[in-house]
Every structure is written in structure tokens, then in C-alpha cells.
Image (cartoon, rainbow, N blue to C red; front, side):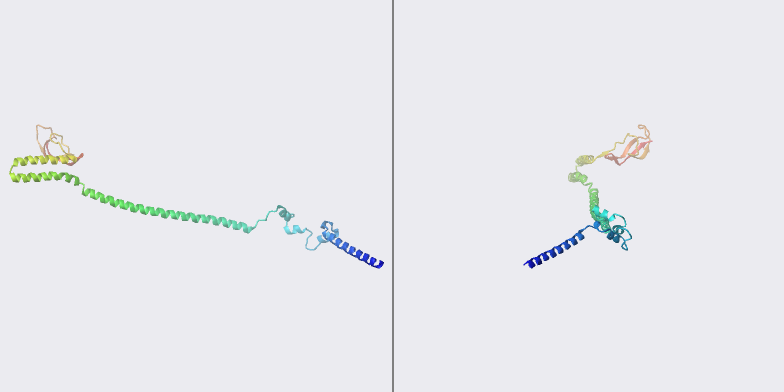
Amino acid sequence: MTQAKDAADQRLDQGAAAGGGAANADNERDRPAAEAPADTLNAASDTPGSGGEPEGEAASGEPGAGAASAESGEPEPQEGAGESGAGADHAEPADERDARIAELESRLEEYRNRLLRSQADFDNFRRRTQREKEELVQFASAGLITRLLPVLDNFERAIAAAKASGDFEALAKGVDMIYRQLFQVLEQEGLKPMETVGQPFNPEFHEAVMRVESDEHEEGTVVEELQRGYILKDRVIRPAMVKVSG
């Protein structure tokens, strides 16, 4: 029984020794590089290809460049992103320019249609105005002729009565009445006869056909009217034919 106890104690001592060795190995692995032996650090620095400089400086080209980038936390700029942004900036103004061109073309087409319609309306107005003007000139005397028709009727009646009765005195009275009726119609249109006898000769109103000697009138005075002149609304439509004293 004593031998069995000694065997059990021996096995416990071996397990404890094995556990202690594993713990020492873990401690060596977790120990920082600063606690490594000096000869180990010197061997790492003398390794061929290192050039005697720290590995961080050889990779970055400048001391502390990698550390600065890591501490700032900012991403390094990428060339591709800038180029794509510039392309977007160029694309956007091109789209706006195309839209502006389309808008201007639409407005130009609208103005062209308006111009064509205006020209068509003006041509129609011009033709209509020309037609109305021709009709006005053609039928301008319609009103006057309408008022002269009763005068013509009275002339026909007077002639018929004179032929039937043979009374020329009645015919003369009828003609005088028709004359006054005709003159009244013409006065309504603005016609006025000229008063020429005894007036100084005026070539704008008078047409001298003869010069005569006269003791009653001064030289250059109208002494006799051969054909009456007329004025229509302050315009001479026929000058008077007169004799002028010389």
C-alpha cells in the first residue's frame, strides 16, 4: 500500500512539472519585445537588407509617415475618385446646355408660327381693305343718285304734262320748281355756286375768256359771268368763265 501511494505522488509531481513548463512557454511568448534580450534586438537590426534603418522608415520614405496616417484616421486621396468627379462636373453642364438648346428651338418654332399667322392675317386684311376701297369708290355716288331720282321723276312728269296739255307756262313753272329741288339736293352735298360779278379777278376761282373795256368797273374786275363756277366743300370743282375789264 505504501508503494501505491509513492507511485501516485510521483505521477502528481510529473504533471505539475509538465504544467509549469507550459506556463513558462506561454509567458515567454506573451512577453513584449522591449523585454527581449539585447543580443536578440541587435541581431534583428544587423539583418541583411535592413540598411540599419527601421522598417517603417524604409517603407514610407519619411520618418513617421505611416504613423501619422494611422493616427489621423483620414483615408488617403485616390486619383480615380477625382477624375470621376471631374467627369460628372463636365457631364452636368452638357445636359443643361442641351436642355437650353431644346427650349430655345421650341420658342423659335413658336415665334415662327406666330409670324406666319400674322402675315396671313395681314394679307387677308389688305385684300379685304382693297376690296372695300374699290366698292366705296364704285358706289360712292349711290347716295347722291338716290336723292336725285325724285328730281328725275318730276322732270318726266313735267314733260308728259306739257305734251298732253300744251300749256308751256305751266311747263315753265314746273321746270323752275324742279330746278329748285335739284339745287337743294346739291346743296345738301356741300355744293355752293360762286359769286363772281363785281369781284376782283382771281385765277384760282375764275377763268378769263375775254377782256373788255368798262367805265363802271376798275381794271381787273369781273364784269360778266358766262358760266357759273361751283365750290364743293371749300374746293373749286369748276372755275367760273368770266369777262374781265381791261
